[in-house]
Length: 97
Image 1 (cartoon, one colour):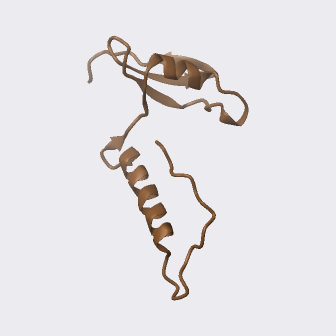
Image 2 (tube, one colour):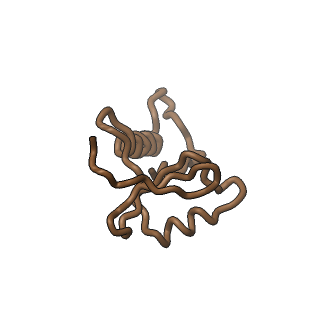
C-alpha cells in the first residue's frame, strides 16, 4: 500500500476549514487505505520475484518486519510469501477449503 507522503503545509484556512491541499491529501490517504483494507479482505502488495529480492535486502529502519506479506505475480503459479523469523516462506497453493 502506498501511503501518500505528508507535506508540512497550512492545514486550515482562516475560516477554520481545511485547505484544498489538505483536503486532497486526506482524500488520497483515505483512498489508499480503502484500496488496501476493507471488510471484504486485505489486498497484498503485488511484486515480482526480483522486486521481492530487493525488498528483502533492505536493512535498518527500511527492513520489513516479520509477518509482512507479498503476492509474487511472476511465480508459476503466483504465490503468497510471508516473512517469518527473518526468512521468506511461501504459502501452499492447495485448494480451499
